[in-house]
Image (cartoon, rainbow, N blue to C red; front, side, top):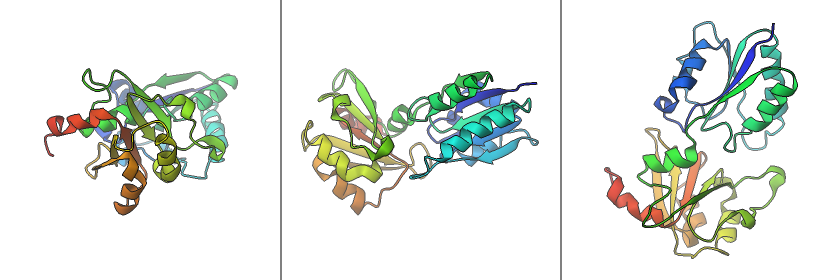
Length: 241
């Protein structure tokens, strides 16, 4: 008997931000394969007999993806309900599409349950809307870390609007150098570390001082970088500022 795989987005960090449907499936799971950014509090919602498997990728651990794929299929072929629990949303730089494709190619049903992406949820928790009719009619989300150690592709980055960078702290020098070609050095920047968690840290700077700020403040991953005029709204929307 074949089981089924669910790709579940756990949200941006705060365990209460998982969706109702995601939580419902998590409580039914026989096996939960979770990644590095999933809150341990969420795992307490699993049933007592669930098998919990940590397979979280860090920098330089891309080869782990093959093990994740094979484990999903192996457990599902045992007739189990398998949840692949991923931080944020499975399809926003989460490689969920690769996992779903692999599972379905093995003849196993796979369902995706979206989660709140850190690209939207983290700025919101810090009092920064990604769009505003005063400052930005759209937003773009990019990854600062690309496969094969490729440099940031400026073709995907508009010259206006809100820009949200995920996984960019470890490429901060390249990121600043690239963005200064298309954005003003004085463009407002917010760097949010550990977004939506009690340890959340928000640092405001400008594009010209981005690398300098990351180094001086000791900012490390996970962190979301927001670039754009919408940051000016934070002093009106953030009650603890």
